[in-house]
Image (cartoon, rainbow, N blue to C red; front, side):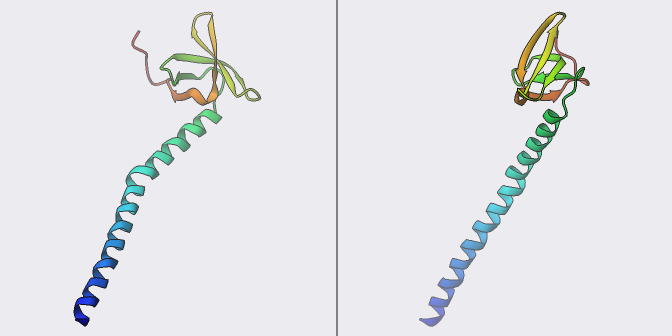
Length: 102
Protein backbone atom coordinates (compact mmCIF):
# COMPACT_ATOMS: atom_id res chain seq x y z
CA UNK A 1 0.00 0.00 0.00
CA UNK A 2 2.87 2.37 0.81
CA UNK A 3 4.53 1.76 -2.56
CA UNK A 4 1.30 2.57 -4.42
CA UNK A 5 0.96 5.90 -2.55
CA UNK A 6 4.56 6.85 -3.32
CA UNK A 7 4.12 5.98 -7.00
CA UNK A 8 1.01 8.14 -7.20
CA UNK A 9 2.82 11.12 -5.70
CA UNK A 10 5.69 10.80 -8.19
CA UNK A 11 3.23 10.74 -11.08
CA UNK A 12 1.68 14.01 -9.92
CA UNK A 13 5.05 15.74 -9.93
CA UNK A 14 5.66 14.54 -13.49
CA UNK A 15 2.51 16.31 -14.66
CA UNK A 16 3.75 19.61 -13.19
CA UNK A 17 7.14 19.17 -14.84
CA UNK A 18 5.51 18.47 -18.22
CA UNK A 19 3.22 21.51 -17.89
CA UNK A 20 6.22 23.65 -17.01
CA UNK A 21 8.13 22.33 -20.02
CA UNK A 22 5.17 23.06 -22.32
CA UNK A 23 4.93 26.63 -21.00
CA UNK A 24 8.67 27.20 -21.53
CA UNK A 25 8.49 25.84 -25.09
CA UNK A 26 5.41 27.97 -25.81
CA UNK A 27 7.24 31.07 -24.56
CA UNK A 28 10.39 30.30 -26.58
CA UNK A 29 8.61 29.65 -29.87
CA UNK A 30 5.61 31.98 -29.70
CA UNK A 31 5.91 34.87 -27.26
CA UNK A 32 9.61 35.72 -27.43
CA UNK A 33 9.83 36.06 -31.26
CA UNK A 34 6.70 38.25 -31.26
CA UNK A 35 8.24 40.51 -28.59
CA UNK A 36 11.42 40.82 -30.66
CA UNK A 37 9.41 41.73 -33.76
CA UNK A 38 7.41 44.37 -31.87
CA UNK A 39 10.61 45.87 -30.45
CA UNK A 40 12.12 46.07 -33.95
CA UNK A 41 9.00 47.83 -35.29
CA UNK A 42 8.93 50.25 -32.32
CA UNK A 43 12.61 51.14 -32.87
CA UNK A 44 11.90 51.70 -36.59
CA UNK A 45 8.94 53.97 -35.78
CA UNK A 46 11.04 56.01 -33.36
CA UNK A 47 13.80 56.50 -35.94
CA UNK A 48 11.62 57.76 -38.81
CA UNK A 49 13.18 60.61 -40.78
CA UNK A 50 12.15 62.79 -43.67
CA UNK A 51 12.80 61.21 -47.06
CA UNK A 52 12.44 57.62 -45.83
CA UNK A 53 10.37 55.31 -48.00
CA UNK A 54 7.82 53.46 -45.88
CA UNK A 55 4.80 51.15 -45.94
CA UNK A 56 1.82 51.95 -43.71
CA UNK A 57 -0.36 49.43 -41.91
CA UNK A 58 -2.92 49.79 -44.68
CA UNK A 59 -0.37 48.82 -47.32
CA UNK A 60 0.17 52.35 -48.67
CA UNK A 61 3.67 53.02 -50.00
CA UNK A 62 5.03 56.52 -49.65
CA UNK A 63 7.84 58.86 -48.71
CA UNK A 64 7.93 60.72 -45.40
CA UNK A 65 7.77 64.49 -45.91
CA UNK A 66 7.49 65.61 -42.28
CA UNK A 67 7.63 64.00 -38.83
CA UNK A 68 5.61 65.67 -36.06
CA UNK A 69 6.85 64.19 -32.79
CA UNK A 70 4.49 66.23 -30.59
CA UNK A 71 1.38 64.98 -32.43
CA UNK A 72 2.94 61.54 -33.05
CA UNK A 73 2.14 61.75 -36.78
CA UNK A 74 3.99 61.72 -40.08
CA UNK A 75 3.09 63.35 -43.37
CA UNK A 76 3.51 60.82 -46.17
CA UNK A 77 3.61 61.68 -49.87
CA UNK A 78 1.86 58.82 -51.67
CA UNK A 79 1.86 60.42 -55.12
CA UNK A 80 3.37 63.57 -56.54
CA UNK A 81 1.63 66.39 -54.67
CA UNK A 82 -0.60 64.07 -52.60
CA UNK A 83 0.33 64.15 -48.91
CA UNK A 84 -1.56 62.31 -46.18
CA UNK A 85 -1.11 62.45 -42.42
CA UNK A 86 -0.66 59.07 -40.73
CA UNK A 87 -0.20 58.14 -37.10
CA UNK A 88 3.40 57.11 -36.51
CA UNK A 89 2.12 53.87 -34.95
CA UNK A 90 0.81 52.74 -38.35
CA UNK A 91 4.16 52.90 -40.12
CA UNK A 92 5.48 49.35 -40.04
CA UNK A 93 8.06 48.82 -42.74
CA UNK A 94 11.01 50.30 -44.57
CA UNK A 95 10.14 50.20 -48.28
CA UNK A 96 13.48 51.41 -49.64
CA UNK A 97 14.39 47.86 -50.72
CA UNK A 98 10.88 47.04 -51.97
CA UNK A 99 8.92 48.23 -54.95
CA UNK A 100 5.12 48.47 -55.02
CA UNK A 101 3.18 46.47 -57.60
CA UNK A 102 2.25 49.46 -59.70
